[in-house]
Length: 330
Length: 263
Image 1 (cartoon, one colour):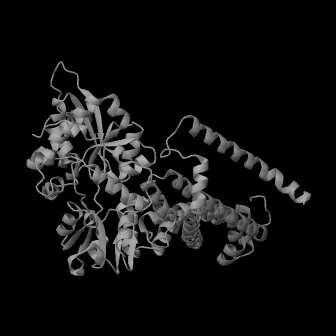
Image 2 (cartoon, chains in turn green, cyan):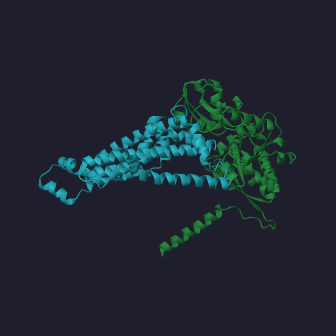
Image 3 (cartoon, rainbow over the protein chains, first blue to last red):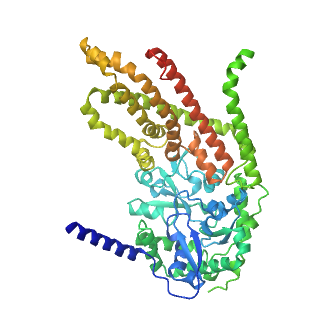
């Protein structure tokens, strides 16, 4: 008798938990929502905040969309998945879009929430290094196969710098004063500080390598075949970003829920650090996400310099601005 | 000349023809279906990148080979020694064997950061990862070889009052050699995998890079042609190590055992 009772209560508990975990009941509306998938390039973090804001605040729903945000992780093939139409929308960085187009992946950028690249090299303050040009006589952990690293190599001498792969852990940085590592300015330096280190941050954008980051991307075919839908996703995402920068609390709570690794404190720091990257130099909020041909051109030239792109690749095909311009700033 | 061809021909011709057919089919499938190059490159494109990057590819293969061979040899030595210890008493075997299995099941991705913390970046860490991945087959095979000696032969040694040492040297060890060869063959292929995985985490990206670095580099650029070339290089390295170990195995078997049929 007793085991049965236990079994029943476990069963009930499970059902209860499942009930709690599932998404809120869709409101009974006669309007059919269009199902859309948005795949992230990393675990949910502040750099995806605006997309989550559009979800949490119901902006996607207001456009008649039922958006599923798929969390990413290391090595998730966003460009490939968008180019093969396994997912309709994705989040990627500008250099990846160009590199993908160079290999016949028809991926097009629609919105550039992070105007400035958060990519940085983190050193210990005690090292005395204050510029990327000063990096020498040390170990630098950086992701192999990253465009910024190849470009950095052409710009600074990196005299006697031992390049080692970055496996995602800051342990080596924390125990070695003579160690530098890559990071995103709103993430790794925060963790290092919390662990008692005193990091100094060198922005890679200072040497001029500054790809748009957390871009909303889709397939070229989707733009021509489902223009209306693309316009809706861009409009809602943009509203989401504008809202996230002003009012991140509830969205951060949601991100913390889907990625418990990110605690509220890290997320609060993240959104503060992301603000000047999204709206640099007094850029008004109604211009959030805009892209310019000059910026794409400059990045394309840098990638051609390191032989990552063929000379004939046209950066003008890599982005589509009309969906942003069609929206009057809120 | 004719004699030489008659010997080699029957061995060489079928795989060469098969290879040509595969290449042709590959080309046609990609060409007809207009498959984009980031998904599957044309065989011609792979061949072109092999020629363009021959220096980088051969240097990377050489660096990976150094780590793979070092790790493999360490695995054979450590594995054989461990098996000797295991074979000496059933109590020892029972106490330690679960931990040997741990080696086989440990997710290398999880311990790689630890390996770097303990041994630093570079060659020694890559070799450590290689040993972790390629050690287990040697331990199991040699242990089985040392302990599964025919009952009758063991009784014969006992009847003649052979010492434990004499039994090990004259009976168990010769019996274990074919098992060692089998274990080493499995281990040689795994050593190449181990070296490449080790390079993912602990290799150098500046100079002295190996195939693991080229894998990351080419996937970062979506250069599937270079990725294919790298995969082919690592496969060739694996086949070469396997062939070498098999050849050495034949020599050993001819010398150490009465019969060669196990080979």
